[in-house]
Length: 135
Length: 186
Length: 225
Image (cartoon, rainbow over all chains, first blue to last red; front, side):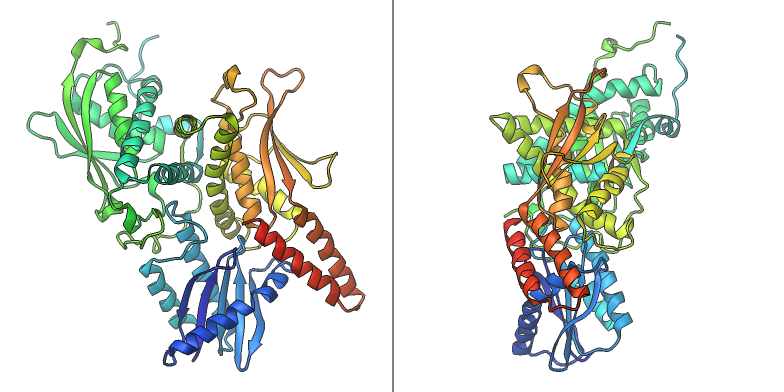
């Protein structure tokens, strides 16, 4: 299980719609903010990279000390971003794929406004469970 | 042409033109979303959905009678069965069941376990009073009115609000016997 | 604001698997529903342009969802990065799933570089509706134009999409053409991207094109909001 893992979903308009600290290490408020800042700063690189491949999983796109930024870009350019210290690439890919499916289900709800925050606690529970399983 | 006996819901459904349910579900979702944005008040939205359903019901009945080959329904019990077994099947591709008849035979429940209108819908906090599928109550009410049955249709169970199924209570208020326009001449 | 509240956890929609897309309803059920959509919107507007705009907005909501759903289910999770790729996706995959057949034709406009047309002899939403003479050029296909726009915008190819009737000699009913006019950024970034690739292949430093490319994409993203 990854020690540190910060997961963020960023909508097409670059606004984060979901975040969660999913690593096994103790959570610190300032660490969480730093993690989110790092992920947000990586958005430009992600954007460029996304146009060079039709794969959704972009593997690692950036580094920060011993932390790696891995990204998964959906068809609608919603970015699933993970800042982590794990080396388990297959696990990360599976995590992204399953969260992607959850995201599609949220999106299919006509009462969910695309680009708005995901507030479903059920979604949060499932994402954390997936993180425990794959990361 | 001599009337053929009533056809089963399945038989009719396989013989008519069909479309992908997702187009239907997503379009209905867009309608509800539009109404919520325009009207803001969920009670108003419920009313509007019911009205839309009513407008559909009064036109849909023609197609129902034509395709199902149903001749005059003698009583409300038979009518309810037709709606559940044939009506829902031929339009929405799902079957419903009828239960909870009262002693007079004027009030029953139609239960839908599968409902193509509600795929992946979850009601947010701000929409708790919304009857998302209210169009269905209007459709039944409108269709029955065209065959001279005045009814009151209300939701008793709504899976989006935490129940385990979709249940509509249909209560016959008034039936005008001789006005049936499709009566077969014997 | 309605729609952005906390979701209550009644039925576990997230546990339900995504459908395979095989379920169907009767065409008439859709036709009745669509007709109510149009009639309701007629009561909310003062003119034809507004009516088309509202239908387009309704379609947009469908398109943005259809893009994610179908890329995941039908395209093995491949994201389209090329103009022709996304057009082909719309013309074939989207059309086939929503309307039961691929679109009749996909053509490039002859007058402008960035125009494409998808045509249909009898667009599903126009099959049951006859437009009264006093409604002029109104086309219910605006709903479908909205679907297409929703797909293209969200895939990163912003465009203006409109529906038009095109009379065909010898045919009583006109065919419907969905006209797609891509935003300037799309054509520029497509050709800049090609330049970038080309320079990359020649091992020249791609610094300059990349930074312009990035700027263009940022501008495109901002404009398409």
